[in-house]
Image (cartoon, rainbow, N blue to C red):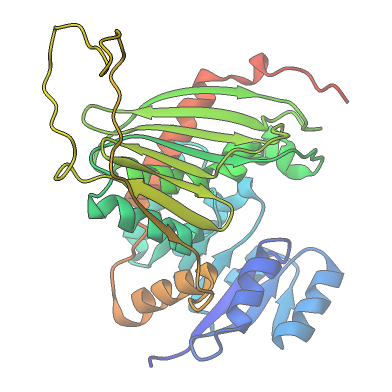
Length: 357
């Protein structure tokens, strides 16, 4: 075990405390929260009690401290780029909450700052470590489904929302809030070595703010599966979280578990293309019909694996303490941001419907 990583957290809101702070408290052999910044006195007081750390009111004050190895940037989304750059320039490793940025040019600014500082710059894409997503990857990579034709992914539900993350000026909206998780997974399945053609439609349905809360994205490319991704807050009958269509079978994720079925060409009825009319055993004209010998499998999470947040922090610890490569790279995040930027280009704010509330 290497040295304990000393952490400073910017922000103690839903992400800074509920996700990062509480996760780090469960990993005392690898991390220690030594300082926190937040503008609200009650949050600073709670942080002092929960972490036993010192606190300050501003990120600038936090970045002046010298006994910190890693800055966790859990500030509001619009501050992710400027504060990450300042932290890198101050000589800290940085872990930034998603979304890292709204535009590729902003990502490139962060990349330049990281290269100049020689420090690690990471982005919190913890859903890459979700057990169900890892299992989906294993099934696809096994080849039993054949060539993958389509991947349908849905992050759906029905809800109204009225907080700051519904406002465009704060980098709000479903695309930037939920999209980084969904797109990170979608691009892993599509392939990160190719630039997809992006088609996107966005709407504003149940949001009290001016940003979108319904997003439909198609990712397409030669020799790649079509990815159909939906993020919606106006789905009263949510669909399966993931469906995969292959030439020899398919997979469905509905709820916690997975089901997939496939056939092997060996042992199936022999068929040949024909132009002759098809008829059944009684000589009646008929359609093509056969019964394939399906094999069916299922999977449910065991509950024995570490939560995905801790898995992410384990990965980051290996990078910081042993120079292991980051599994989620800035280049991958750049590809994700490029897709989101194109989605916004195709759906300018002026086209968003007005709120009905």
